[in-house]
Length: 93
Image (cartoon, rainbow, N blue to C red; front, side, top):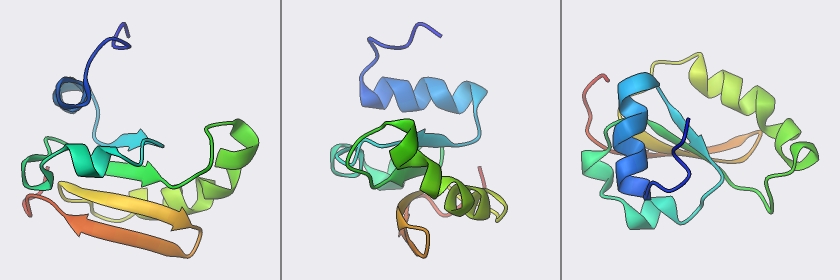
């Protein structure tokens, strides 16, 4: 989409125009952004890398989260059974 040069704040804003959720492995994002002002729900996969074999086990947990209503919040998926929700703006997207 030509977004590789965008910084996180601009990327999240642009993402909110086209997508319902932002999925990332960037664990620093939660410390770099104001969670109260998230323009879109953010899901962070807590992994050691972004290779497919590492990401595949997170699939069922991601689907589980996406099947539920999501507000503008940050969701950390640490393992299949450890999902942490950090509140953002508590209104439906």
